[in-house]
Amino acid sequence: MRSPLSLILADLMTQNMECSIFKTLTIHVPFYYRYVDDIIIAAPNKHINKILCSFNSYHERIKFTIEYAEYGVINFLDKTINQKWENYF
Image (cartoon, rainbow, N blue to C red):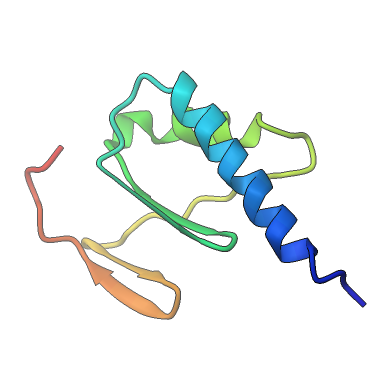
């Protein structure tokens, strides 16, 4: 059985990770949203690998994967998100 503190500690660790990573990034990330352990980020294509490497280098046991939007559409938390800003980047 998990401890009731598990979710709180995981959330605190994730917030600490976010702060550390975004302090070191020199890339402007126009959209970032996290719910528990699911993250969605909108960023220019040329910087996606650098952002992914930053997240994956935070801790050896934490590894992130990436899913790209197809035709401006991506699913996040059982919702479909449509990209409406074609020339945003």
